[in-house]
Image 1 (cartoon, helix red, strand yellow):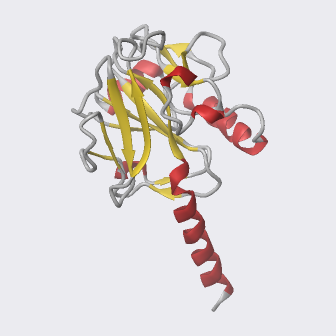
Image 2 (cartoon, rainbow, N blue to C red):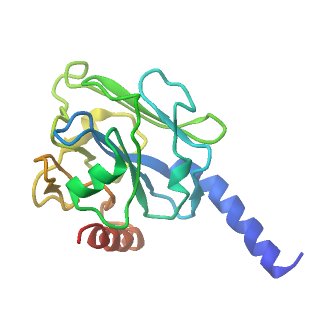
Length: 207
């Protein structure tokens, strides 16, 4: 086996093993400029998003294709939206962020976000709703963010909080008046490499 082939095979194995580390990292179910969901590769290897998909509480793999996200590098995020990508990018003044849409399986006040891999396997789920789960957040015009890295993949909306100006994610107001931080996820201290990637991405996404 050549050295090059060994490297390629090793990278493929790492990507497959790390595929479960793509996570839901932000969402807004209703906004003046449309709703959105952010997914982030919080693992250590690239993940090929070809054949991956999103659905709401109907839980059907293949409903909205995420192949357009391409190869998702460690620390990289992408966003799916109900508006056109161009309109969303303009409203949030984004740069260097992959935005896919519009999707038609829109989120409700009490709903689910389901992420499936290319084999139709559930990778991440977030079941939310301030009416279903009293005391939890309502992401209307303000996005929800995980309180810590431990919230990722836990499917526990009690571990999520609303964005606010000056938060660790660098939230800001869109042209439509929505508050959030679409386009990157900055993890809690403990992974300095990913933190650096998150900060670099955050710097790039705003002109």
